[in-house]
Amino acid sequence: MIPETLPCPLCKSPIEIAAAKWCDCLSKKLSVVCPRCHLCFCKLQKFAMEPEWTAALRELLERQTVEKFRRALAASESKVAHAQTVLIVDDDEEIRLIAEYTVARMGYRTFTASDAEEALKMAAEVRPDIVLTDALMPKIDGRELCRRLKYLDPKMKVVVMSALYTSTRYRVEAIHDFRADEYLAKPINFKRLREVLEQLTAKAA
Image (cartoon, rainbow, N blue to C red):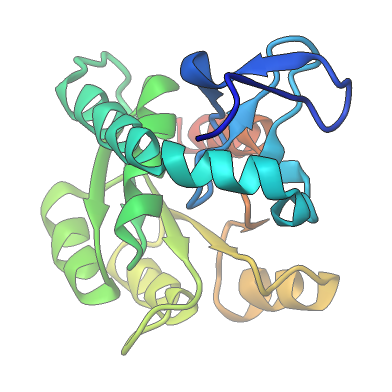
């Protein structure tokens, strides 16, 4: 059994496990947020080395999964008035769910695709204003998808995101060689994602 409370790794204030709140980061894992200092455990690279917290998160895994699908359902059922549509492309289902929830909460209509082929078909049907795509996917990667989307509709805005392409060189490659409108490194910063979508929305207006 895990204890009822565990200390925050940063401020040491007690966090009640049964009432744990989840972060809004665009990453595969939903992590605990400290109610006092608002630390998101996604930011702690050595977090897995904490044995008590590691055990606690294992027991919270089912609750995390339920929360992910609750967010995705809320996003799909929400009625948004925003004229802009965002197509989210990622071969990881959990990331798609979290991304859809996050983007829908910003007021955008959302669609999802599990790979580039599905994304191309959907893009031809719904003509999204913005496409948010993972860089590394099987068969057709996100950068090649970007090139094909631009051929389909040069006005379509495409954001390529990847945990691997973090250097300036790869950012330049994504934008100049593959015609991406913006590049984001994973895990996506919630504030930065909002800024990028708003900037691209303004350009499309």
